[in-house]
Image 1 (cartoon, rainbow, N blue to C red):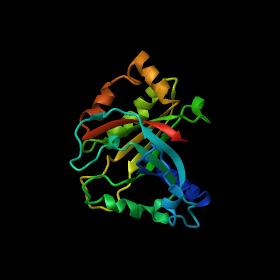
Image 2: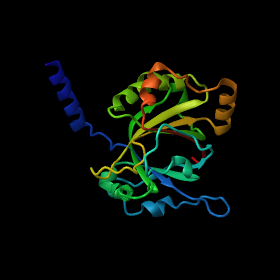
Image 3: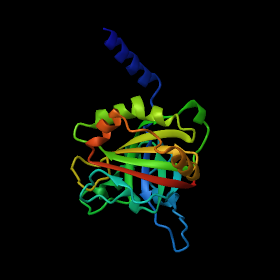
Image 4: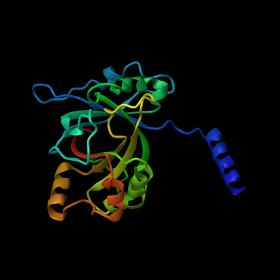
Length: 244
């Protein structure tokens, strides 16, 4: 009976107060020109995907890769590492299914390497109160393909341990976690990892200085070993925000 009442309340809440469309990001590889500049025309790229219920994309970040080639665990056979990209633009959308943007992801199926566009939908946002209103200049992107049946273990680790440990680091601001939007049910071995966590820090310089003084941002634990130990792919890339 109690569960039925809760379900009814949730139904009424959704009817009376419609839920906003889930946030979706487009992770887009953008090569620099001969002067090393990145003048990606995101408005021109996304034209035609907005409708009356979706006012189109906004640029979330333009990023420059500052990582050495750092990869962990096994890699998908046809997957091109995030570390290959020198610069990327990250756009934020509402409902990509309503806007038609989901069609852009179709090119990833059956291709020899990762498409220039990868779509991820927000599943979890974590932000300490002290970080509200602050914007970081450094993004640590962690892409994970968990072990078979490892999704729950990964989610539990993030929600119940890892993010709380990161929140103790003074330069840490927030984390946004996403899952890959697959355009079709057909399996494709070259798709990017299904989980992407974007950890935001005050700056790349602050991140480097902290690591030199204190070592890893979060210690290895039994939970982290269970969540990551059997993962098919784990990749960490550090990005400098060049256009916030």
